[in-house]
Image (cartoon, rainbow over all chains, first blue to last red; front, side, top):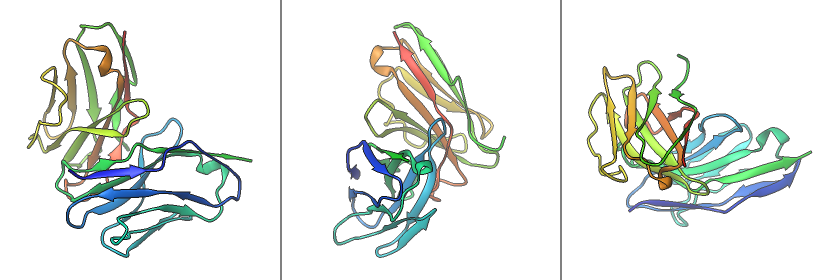
Length: 112
Length: 114
């Protein structure tokens, strides 16, 4: 079945450092891809998405490009802030309702 | 309410007891989802509802787990005869439709089975 693999954490960075969290997927067809973020004490919320190959999702300075050839959707940010400290989840779905699949999550801690 | 509401936020129970977890989705959202998050694991899909119907219940881990949704709104996840391996955070999410791809999550119910 479909699955998502993301880099293990935790990841600890200094403020203003560059961030990359790797995400690769295994799926039939052309799923939609997502990054969700869970800030401390809050529920998961959608960070960005891409629905077809070569699409780039972006939000709050984060970006991820849907790469069909490498089955990847890596999350990147050029300069992280302390407020970006959270757990990040990569996910995919074919939008059938029962098929949203999440990675294990990557905890990011940004230190001042 | 403004967001997805789950209760209780924290539940400690003894092995063998039954527990009920409640989810109140965003008003107007027709699709509702239950996931389980165990320590160090990703989100495990349990079940989803379109309206009051659950098309596929095969994601539920065992026959001790059941879920229902009434009035196209509130959902209850029931775990009978709890076991220690049931300890996890149970997350509920809702969306406008099953095909939107954007889920809105509650903060979860943390279940600890002693």
